[in-house]
Length: 351
Image (cartoon, rainbow, N blue to C red; front, side):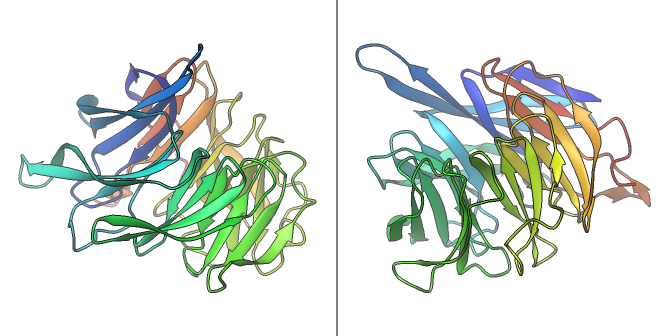
C-alpha cells in the first residue's frame, strides 16, 4: 500500500528513519548531483519528512543544502550532550558532518522535528567519503573512503577527531560497518572484492580475517545482525546476498546464498524481527528477504521505482497493536528518477 511519494531535488541515494522514540515519524533522505563542466562540482541535499502511515501523510519538514552526499546514518543512541538525535553525513568533499535534530512536542506524544542544525564537521580526507557507520555507543564512526582507506572518527564534546586511519583496500571502500556486539571490530568491503574484519585494539589496525574468493564483484554493503552475534550479511554487485557465520569466514553459510537479480547496494535488518531484511537491488527494485539458517527466500518485491534502487529503511515502532500485527512501514529511494516512496508490504512478511 502506498503511503506517499515525492520527487527529490537531486539524485536520491539514502533514506533513514530516525530510530529514537518520539522521533520515529522523522525520515531523512539524501541526494548527490554531479555538476559537470570545466570546474565540476558535487552538490546535495538532506530533506526531512514527517511520516504518518495511518493518515497517509508524507509532509516536508526541512531541506538542508550540502555537498554531494553518499551516505547518512542516525546515531543509534542519544548522547547526554547534546541530548537529541544526531544525523551523520559522509560527502564527496571528504567531510563528515554531524547534524542535530531539534524537536517540538506538538501533540504530547510525538516530536515533529523542527529541523536539523549542523553540530560539527571535519574534512577527514582529500578523497571522497563513501559510507559511514556509528559504533553502538554513538561515540565514534567508521568511514569508508574512495582511495580504499578507512577512518575511525570520534565524537567528543561536539568535536570530531580522527582516531585511526589505514589503507584497507585497493579500490573504493563502499562498506564499513561496526560489529554491534563487539564494537572493537570493523568489517569492510570494497571494489577489490575483498571482505575484511579489523581489530581496532591494534593501532594501526590489523585484519582479523580477509576473504578474497567469495565475492566475484565489488562489495556494496555489510550488515551485522542486531539479534544474532554470529550472523552477518553482505551485498555485492554480483547480485548475491550472502549470509555469513563470523566464526567461520572461509565461505558463506549457504555457498550460493540468494541471487536478487540486481546488485545488492543496501541491506537493512528489521529492527524487531530476526531473520528479516530489506534490500535495495539497484536494477531490480527492492526485496524483503527472510532467512533462517541456510534457508533464504524473497517474501516480497517492490518495483515502483524506475531507476537504480539505492536507499531503503524500515520505520521503527510497535510491530503489533492490541494483539494484531501491524504492517511495517518502509521508505525507498532511487537515483536518477529522484523518487522517494513510503509504502507498506502487500503481504504478511512476518509469517
